[in-house]
Length: 187
Image (cartoon, rainbow, N blue to C red):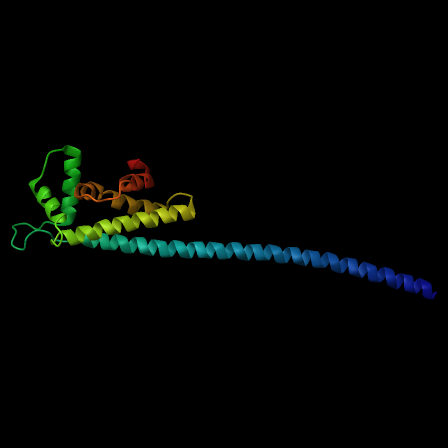
């Protein structure tokens, strides 16, 4: 009878080892699946956080641009207040309708005169538009799915400055094309 019990115990031990191996493989597979889920959640969280930080920088650039566009550039005793934003509109009018504008010609002169009241804010606008382009290029390489609508909005706002900035000069050659490709209406 002892050999029979020994055989039963041996078979029971083999069966127990087999069950443990299956359970171990199942647990290992579940752990791998949970690890993959956690990794994807971490990537999503990191991507969302990066997106939030990116949008924060874009909003800051936009706020600084908006402030600069409201900069008064007319002489202190001038009969009417003139801002850089009005010169943006004047550049667009000249581009679309042709002709010239003495006020815009004078603006261009001061915008290119180092140290003038107009040159410093215009230089800052150029810098911010180029930074916006850099951030959007970086975002497009990171996401590679296109641009979110809010980013297209900010790119469109920067695109509106192109006629004035190109008239002033010293803008990187493909800046207009870049902003135009972010949004289809300009393409």
